[in-house]
Image (cartoon, rainbow, N blue to C red; front, top):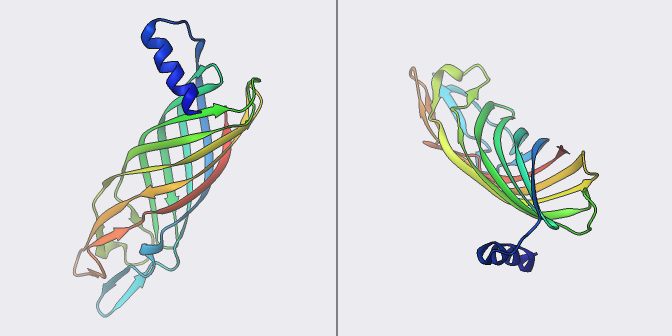
Length: 197
């Protein structure tokens, strides 16, 4: 994989013709994020409160962009809209993602695998319980990286993603409420599956 990527850069630098084609591309995925450090984050007011129960969040992502095919490799670049929900919070994010995939066969749609990563803005999440008026979160910049695999045909492919997401919100009590920590760390492992066009 590394040899092919280096060869492509070298060929471009010295003026050798390399086959490249760019097409519109999109992905829709969903899965689970496990954030070990968010468990038992608590919002309290008047001696009572609510807390996040568990470490899991359902996540979903839609991406639109392009994919440039270079021989048996491809580079994808996308605008991203995503969201998540767990026992106490819902949130959305926007950002950008790139990936590099090496195709193991010559046919379009053959199994391909490689790294991916992105950066985005995670808007202030919404506390969905009864104590939402007593907590405030600041939006934050976060990111993610991992491994992506695709397989299928030229037009439609299944996509699998496994990676780590970095998200940390500043938190504070509001309207006489208090929080158990001034930070809510939602970073954790993410596994998603979906469809790539």
